[in-house]
Length: 185
Length: 301
Image 1: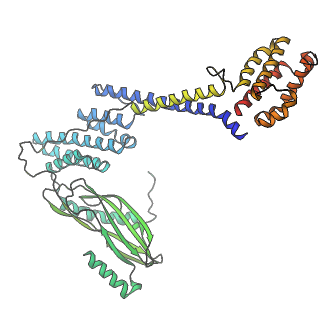
Image 2: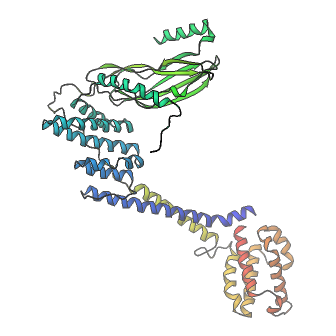
Image 3: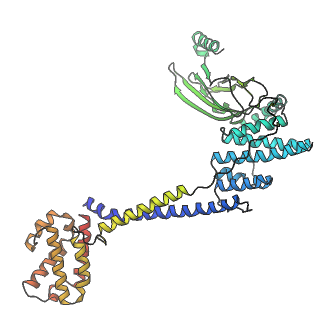
């Protein structure tokens, strides 16, 4: 009797499950094809703003579009959404492209002998490349470009190291103290 | 150096066991040369803390930038029982170097300052996990191939969003839905499976539902149709007296025994007793319902 009930109920339950799966996958396909359409627009050099629920890859495409056009600040506004939604692979490439845009600015400033403008850009480029390597150590282009910008404006690690140690010591003391009131924002 | 430390720890352990809280401190790393900018390497540091001492987790270094050149990416601590009593701790630390070397040179990973506590205010600090490696530059100092020093590697291009995985999934689920629909049609003897020989009651239920309400003649025909379905299911002409054996053989129909007996009783009174259909108490509605129930029971058998 138990088996008989199973035999008579199985086909409709199977059909229902398959229909639910069809609905879910169909909806997903619809979403992906919409994203692909937006991406095609961007690749065709049209200034399209991605929707709020865009995927990480689409946001990276938008950032790439902005970075190639030297609109770094706008691209930087996407950073939290990209790190939240994209894989580490894509996040690393986003940071790498930010670094490249900064490096291009710095090189242009150096070639125009405006060293004061170049120094902060180099510093930001280094941070971006390091961020890229933290997300994906296998991104060799980021290593190479980090090496290039490191030599543009050389750090003085010995000096910095000394500073860091003197600064780090009291900081560590404070953070280890238990029950330190943090206060409301 | 390591051996000396080991020997010292061993000597200490032998000479004054009560004084040794931490022993057998070891650090192992990968090849200590050919480390390039951006490389990730893992150091394993292990030591034994004698009871009642345990590692103070607050003394472990925090992940993040450790020095100018080195980041601590990850830190895992595993504990196991040591052979001589106490706890063996194994600290797995993953570092990444960000030092752009101009020439091949030696860099060091700073030692971790760890401490063990005995839970009664006793505390002993020690250092472990230092390592030295040789780092090499990625590029020569002076380029000879004629390119400028500023040549950057090109931008990373975003990957194209592919429809393929979503399409495949949708196609698979559409196929599964079609198969499930076919299975359902087969199980219920819907077209194109409506002539399935093993579903006589399903067929009869359709005919009965059509004929039974069309008056006395239709009701009689419906009765005969249902009889034929019983015959087909039993594999022989089924009479009212054989019902007990039939139901024992097919327990799926036993639930509707009362209805079946009423049906056979009505049939006998109409065909052999000459009674009018209205006098049998088996209405067209009841007949249709019985046929439908039997079709359901048939699917479950």
